[in-house]
Length: 88
Image 1 (tube, rainbow, N blue to C red):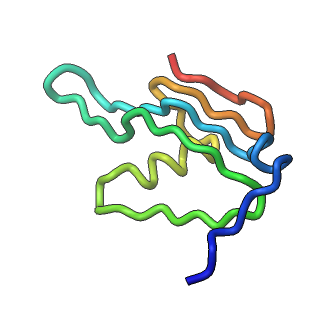
Image 2 (image 1 turned 30 degrees about the vertical axis):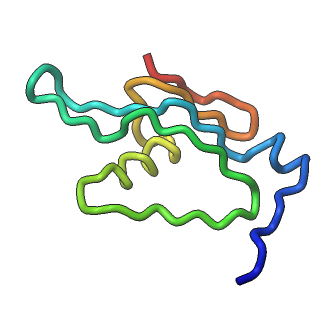
Image 3 (image 1 turned 90 degrees about the vertical axis):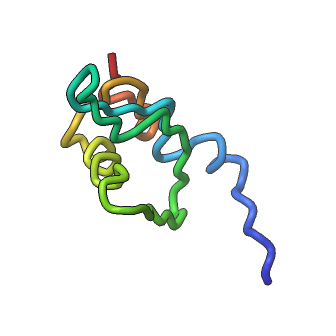
């Protein structure tokens, strides 16, 4: 099996997306649905990313937040060193 390619220093230091403690909750109290819980990751330019999970696991919610179609309940998303929105 080939070795995992190393990211260069510039790419690792400046990810395209930097996601920290991203949370999305629909509803409140006993009826609250936690679509995302404290998701954190960096995505570098040219990186291949697969988002895989069961139905209802938060894949579409995650992509909608990254695409600016939805807002996080808490946490932050940085796109190319800009913070378009931040959760409460």
